[in-house]
Amino acid sequence: MAALTALRSKVQPHVAGCPLPMIDDAILQAVVEFCNRSRAYRFTPAQITVVASTADYTVSDLPANTAIAWLLSAELDEVPISTPDAGSIPVLWETEEGSPSAVVVVSDTEVGLRRVPDEAGTLDMRLALRPSQSATTYPDEFHTLYQDQIAAGALAKLYAQPRKEWSTPDLVNDCRNQFEKAIYTAEHRADRGSAAAPARTSLSLIGGH
Image (tube, rainbow, N blue to C red; front, side, top):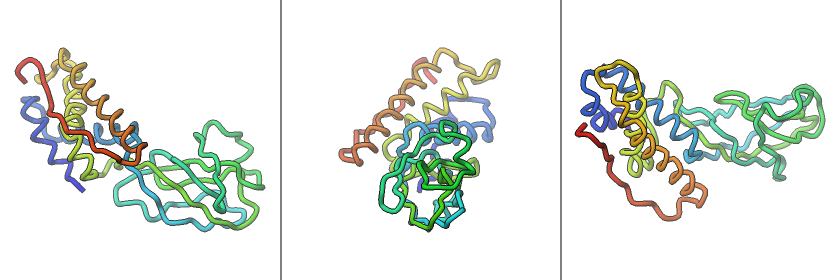
């Protein structure tokens, strides 16, 4: 895993006067957004043993300081099961017992079967993760391929702050576009199974920052 502080050198020189804690928070929020939107931080947890009359389960083997961002796929007793957003399923399924029709993200570390299972079984899943708010690292692969673009995402957040010494609204869109392109590239690459790594491009700023 790469340290988030490794991105400081790509952000701090461009935001003179910005306090270091604010820089570090912008970096963290950029990495969280990158992972959340690209769905590229993928993880297969250990199989979960399903117990009758128990709907929710903690994913106990998540990497440290990570959270579940998305449920990409799931199988109940080796049969694919739907993975919709929690808000899109009938509320009744949260308490109704029967054969589960879906599995949803319940919290940063929990998933839930909907309906409540009426018999034992097994649950296998593929997840997309994001760093938690206490994270200090992120995947080495993302640092190698996208460090400049993630730094651009952090800069966009800082440049957009009004009436600050480092406010630079003219650069927000340019930095944001670099960040958005990296999110799209990472998502596409992850969906292809990390086939061919795209070449890493350098952070490009306009206006002498």
